[in-house]
Amino acid sequence: VQLQASGGGLVQAGGSLRLSCEASGSIFSINAMNWYRQAPGKEREFVAAIRGVGSVNYADSVKGRFTTFRDNAKNTTFLEMNSLKPEDTAVYYCSAVITTSTAPGLRSMRNYWGQGTQVTVSS
Image (tube, rainbow, N blue to C red; front, side, top):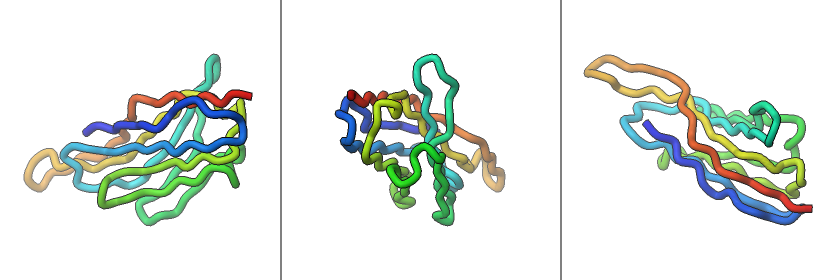
């Protein structure tokens, strides 16, 4: 299983970006799909999550500005980021809780991480 994140870039403050994260491989099902970020010199922090049933939650710092949604048919989650601020600058990572079929009748569930995509917001 692989998670491929994309969509990062350089944007001015107040601008928008849309990140995407596609899961591929021998996937049986995907539960939560999450976004985290890590700014230079800081620990990785939670940004947003969407569950398999569609419920979402966000970090307080992005509420009202960021929206996450998913396309289950494409095993893809998105992070729509609006009204970006310089403090949103970070490497953004996606993760997902994925169940795989390891053998007939056997399944394994674990959390997978993508490689990260850089978002830079200039003031």
